[in-house]
Image (cartoon, rainbow, N blue to C red; front, side, top):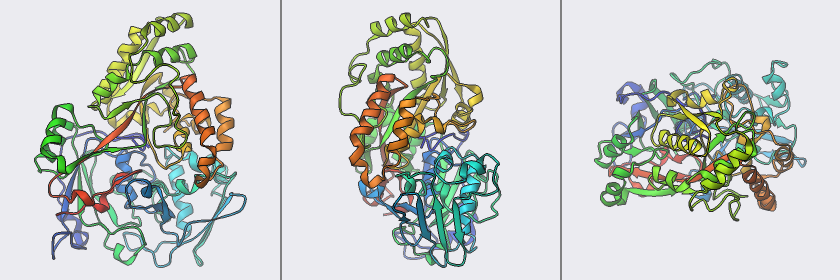
Length: 555
């Protein structure tokens, strides 16, 4: 999942615009907020430095999309609403229970809960699941390789060779849903927890519905969308009838507003003129000390399982040369990049981050990431590679500090003997642009926040099978036979048995670091920062989705 412009491309930044929840009709008075004995549901204002890439669950793939989609589109399974490790636990969603998995790990069987209805009151059917998966694939969701690479018949459907996915069977009468896999995939239940697998009605248009998101099953529904400026997540008037254990009904409506300036975003929350600072945004260093001193009771630094890196196109010069990639690894001053992130970024070099099984604990192959860079070694490698003077276009976003990351990266490439220039484009189109294989970008900013607690989630980005013509996530087009052979085995291991292969994942990650396929520079902590109207102690920071909107309550 891409953070910020992160689950994977994004929408254009724009000016602030309020959305009046009075326009929400009956949903605006469907429940009573904490701190109020009667009347309409209260509203919380959530500021986001980056708009969601898409509010349509069949397309959304950034953290900003996942936050509202998670609570509006429930899949067969979902995650517990809890902080820390308990929040990574899968619980039944629209299915009655967690899946029955065959002994060979290739067949998953569910039974749909009875009496479910969508946020428009339409009954939920078992066959809606197959339609939902097919729709996300037709829309070319960025993570569709999780479907095409695992479900029997999904690849044929995606290639236009079949009219449906043969590996998904459903019975609307009994509610039974059966999914057949090509081979065991240990994290498949986690794949089913993606909001993109959250059920929508059969017949939902196969087009981008971000401006008017389709009905879903969840405590909230997304409405009042002003493209690139604001949207609302309001309580679903039908949710009281659902009573799915473990999924809270929520306490307030949320008015999400896009604020392109993080300084202004932070100031509004600090002065209590807005309620929530988006966790995926960076608190500017110019205001961080003020926040820490004046709002310590409503601010916390939360660890995340995330990796920040520069992608390097291994298919083209100069990064087709391992010596050039190594030179980059030696030349980066990760301390400088951390300073650009107000100290929220911990210098690092391994692809699997702290908190993820398989994260290497040994020394980095190109020196201490918290130490000084080795420019002498880097320049020597560039000379030996024969690539000195090669032109490099470095792609980046406009938002702070990502633009500054790219400025720094370009200066490093120039300092070691390459000729770098920058291609800075709007956040709205960044990831969808660099994910277009025809453009063949050479290098640029990238990041990843865990979709689920399994290293296979991160290795989607280095898996040759995930390379696709559009919405590509393997930006470096890495295609290494050793990686592929290891993934073929490691991906089969059930999440419950990951510890048994932790050393093997670690060895793979150490191999990837030595190959310098990506220029990793940090693992990020994120701010949990709210106004004094919010009950800060009850607000959950979720390990997958960041701020859990269902936990927000007014004092």
